[in-house]
Length: 366
Length: 114
Image (cartoon, each protein chain N blue to C red):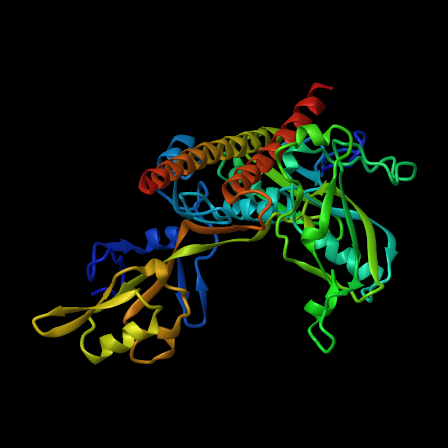
């Protein structure tokens, strides 16, 4: 039938050619009621008799593909098929923590009479994303920190200034209570952070406006007589050091779900079965007046395993995930477009490998 | 990473068995699961490798112990070097494929906008 030795693989129709148990262990992650099976990669040479699992670059290139599903200026969704979880996870980790950006690091507070404490304000300023291409800057050398406290060279620092003074609006009506009418400059937004070019930055970045990505981030509120006079230095850093340097709002992936029906389901059961999955996953097909359940698009499923909660429905489907098909979602915080972020992340991993290869080669030559 | 002085070793070798070059534990500094797991996968795909594993000694220290045991008397640096080179090639191929697909997608987008 479909229970013992073989598992049906659903390819749009009710039941297609069954997959052997070995194939299933090698390629699918099974979602069961009380756990998840076959999570780890097991296709190493020697594990399966009859299979040649040694690394073959040509086979990898043949089976690997990337499909871009959606891309706009801040978000992208793409599929990476034919790669192992360890490498896909490496890309995800690098996107979160090792792709560099510029962010405010040193805050020189010359005057802060607002009710926001110095350190709270400095913390908030650090978290504002700064629109500057980090590839055009270098890391600030942490060696000579003592002497060079206020200086920063043009190649590794961006200087920003925030100077706001709140005053009473002389033209407000006598009995208005709206702060927007009563006060001038009482809300300090990130658009008030002005770039102060150092050295030759004015020529190099003449046409690009360096400043915060979003101008509507509220930093502090003031009342008449209070003022802020702050100078900030932005440096290049990575998310591993501080989360403010992370270039992505988030980067995540999920495995492609695969839902296969083990039996034909019709009528009222089919209706209930359809309701157990996300909308669009399963549809009812009309045949000779009777309704049959059919899996239409398992990619849309969020794998809530709701169907396993119903005694009469849980043996009718098999929930699985394809182990080497990753659906990536990358949302940039605005500093760099998401496709540039992914290419930078891949280059970071290549740099790591080259570093250790050089180290191996130089230590061998000694 | 930025800020490291050149004298600090990035890769050290701790030889547990004297004389047997096939069983070596490497210490990789400033690394974590990102490189550890992906490198372990590619080294395990090598036929000559009998054992490959990595562990993070302590979560407060950013270094990993990477152990390779080979069969047939092959020195352990060989699979390590092969694994690193292959990881480099995999990344290069992923990069090329990704950039080609992005350009294609952007081209399609421009076409449908006109």
